[in-house]
Amino acid sequence: MENTVAQRIEALSKVQQIDSELDAIRKLRGDLPEEVQDLEDEIVRFETRIDNLNADLGSTEANIEQLKGKIQDFKKRITYLEEQQMNVRNNREFDAINKEMEMLDLDIQVAQKKIRDNEADGKVKRDKIVNTKEALEERRKDLQAKKAELDEIMAESEVDEQKLLKQRDKATKHLDDRLLRSYNKIRENSSNGLAVVSVKRGACGGCFATVPPQRQADIREKKKLIVCEHCGRVLTEVEVIEEVEAAPKRRSTRGRKATAKKK
Image 1 (cartoon, rainbow, N blue to C red):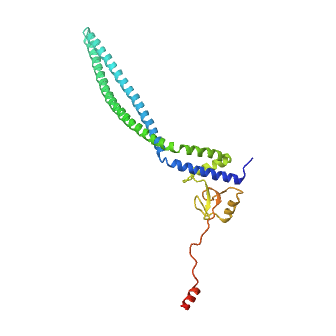
Image 2: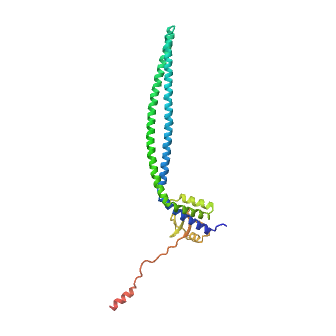
Image 3: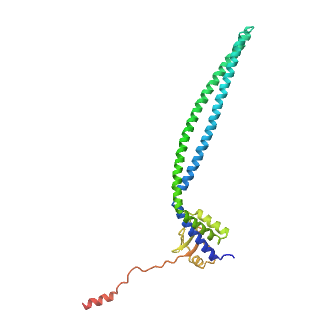
């Protein structure tokens, strides 16, 4: 059976009441959930950075070993050429072997320079890994402390929160999906989390814009959903504020004059 407009308005008001209570509970947590999330994200970034540095360091060390291997090959070739130089038949062969040995000696010098550069680069990367690991350990300690603080707060309010969530699920069953989506969207765009408000002193309880008398009458009838023309919040009721006359009644001036004559 489809709910009447009045029932849907009542359900909306109930959901808003529950959400406001949930907001109050979650407000007690302050920025802790965001701080915990930020620390977790930062830890992931540090871990990724360490992995990347280790991978780069591995490549650097592999380059060093490769260069050392080349130097050994160059030296072996030089030793071989020195032996061949003893058996040359003419100056042309001697000069050719000598030229190749000079080139190999230059190749060795270039490889040794590259090794020194790679070793310096490796030292920088090792220092970065050490520093990043120290920062990572500090963040893990901070995360542990923040989580403990958050868990303590959540433990205190968990029972109440779960109870309210069950009540919310029950209340939302009286709302169709489209209306519930609209309600949630208004709440997301609202700074105070209010999507359903009442009319107070002739004004919207959310944005305080004036609500015309005819719209107030429509709100009281509850025959259709009325929203604020300025902020889009749902207006569910019109609060009546009785004005009490605070000033005491003044005594009659005539009475005071009559008293004065008798005296």
